[in-house]
Length: 244
Ligand code: SAM
Image (cartoon, helix red, strand yellow):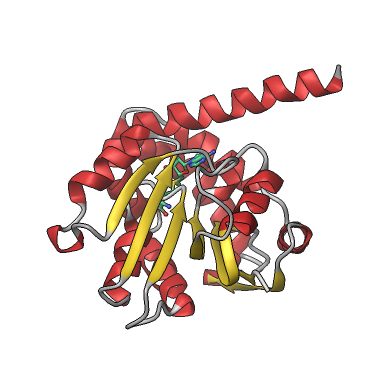
């Protein structure tokens, strides 16, 4: 049946993604800096300044596809002592790197959980905020991930998603294409010994829905006040929404 066929393909997509991050886990942070020329730090900082976690109140934050902890560490640095962040990722190798590099000052305020964005191991209305940075394009069924985000958020909860987007600026788009199709896999090969995982990552950016289509999916999941903001000429977009 059509259903059976697509299920197999979805399973294949997830195992391919898992293999990519298993291979690169140890070099992941270095590669991020090299490939984005350090820009990913500014994109992540922009997410945090949009989020503005409360300085004094209790605050529960879920960072999905949290990988090696970049977003979680920033959330904790920007929030008060009553904040707690859960880093959830499907890949144990990425989480292990995150656990290792988590600063001691975050002890007791952060946990690392192996889990799938498509079925979160939490009851309804558990979190004040949900973030996913450069993760949602790797999830086979984006609608399921969005529905789960909505479910685990409290009323008034915030959804923020950083993801690569489509560059619409003339000239920059050509440079960006040339860079991502040739330089990125080449860098990947030099640093991790294998260019293939990075070829896959570049492909997954092309296949991700256009901004308007993605916003529609967010609304479809139940969210309100859905907005998005391009950064660096549209290389990356910050999507924001609320569970009203
Ligand atoms: N958020 C981190 C950052 O910005 O540096 C890591 C982003 S990394 C490009 C993508 C992450 O998505 C990987 O750690 C991968 O294991 C995770 N991932 C892929 N599929 C997932 C799924 N179905 N559920 C949860 N995490 C997933």
